[in-house]
Length: 131
Image (cartoon, rainbow, N blue to C red; front, side):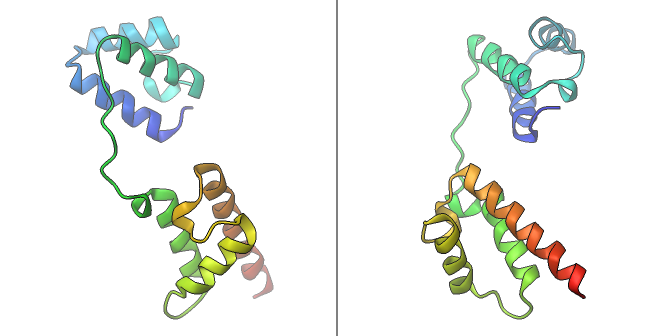
């Protein structure tokens, strides 16, 4: 199964290119070797997106600021769940600085943000086990 962001791009491209359902399904079958986008692997989804670009589709740049990225919001949410009371942004930034050598979660690259999320989830599991 492909990444949700890739599936979203596929559906946006289909809509913006105004593909008929039959055309869309034929493209999925020809390029991705599947009948439904939900069955695409990441590699096949990338091939479908590349095909849409060949057809003239241009992906729009995100208008969200880096702090509004979903992975950054997830890090703040997990941190808040770990610590009762008001969100201590300074403590979170210190943790990120020690672990990833950047000054704030907003500056984490996507791979590092995923790693931070997994570390915070593991921390939550350990806290639940000790209760």
